[in-house]
Length: 486
View: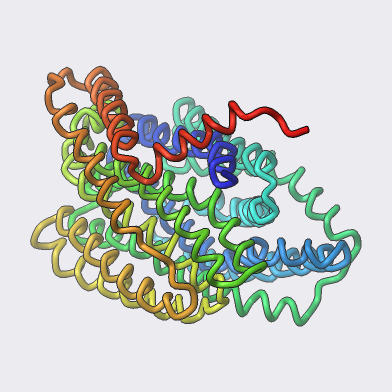
């Protein structure tokens, strides 16, 4: 029941993320054009890699240790936030060094060089906001998280779209929007963080402990991100920036949709798994994790199936004309790759974070990352962007096998085979319902097929109780009809 409440509470944040993500594809593929959109996609990937590699340790520590510090009392909590603040400041020095190296690397590319100042400005802003968001999530302060997260995303997208429309900033426009919106959000978050420290000083021992925990997570997340973006750089090398634009557009629609749903389930479920682990141990975390993975698959698997079935009208509705044909070819495959990625990073990797074995997680992530790069080098020259898709799917499959298999030593996260088969059967039931709808094209066809698929899937999951859906509805109905306690 608590997981359901958290899912409902985090829903606005995920709707905001979906609107910003799909809106960015819709607007920027039209306003920027293929090559500029390709540059934007490449620099967005670079920004994400630098941020994750250099700034994620402090953000990860803010999530992992906030609940523990809160349980220890106000003094420990203040010291915790002072330590997080110190960690963020030190991490920014690494980010600055990475930006200097990047500036030297693109010094002969003026179209990329004029984007760099905005990426540099975004670093301190985004890490401050993200660290405080992680603290809110760990403390289960859902409303505060949703408000800050939603404004940052929607404000950044809206301002970036206006700037791209009214100016000739080109690929820099989305980054300018992110900086302005981030600055508006960062000021109250900075005041909040300062208030939480209550004049406390950072603890040197905790700084070392937080780095020991956070640096391997940053490495693992960077390797996972490399799985998602390395192919873009290799596509640019072998085919060109316009091909990157088409690949990024299709990838952004399919992968982002599924990862948003997996992240939604993780936002709601991971704090509950963490609390169970801290309070009762691995067995309790395992029991709580069953609800998390069932929810993730209940919403993620039909979404991947649905994207595969509506790839053509989806690309016509969201993606600019110059990019949509190639994008539509990869959407079905990237949708299922996104589900694999969601299970890898939002479910199975959690075992290492609970057990604080993040260094081992980072080492294991070298396996799929290496496979991905090697497969892309071989397959892209022969098969184009479809080769990149094949490399992505293979690397995620290998990553799941490595992370899930090794993670069982610490917390044996379950995989509910029978519920998954029921969810798969309910998802496949959408196929004939969607197939009988005529090819209207664009938004009319997309809306009609999405509605038909959703109705059939909902009816199927209730009929066969896939993922415990029917039981959940009955429990909610019984709870609403029970008389209040006296």
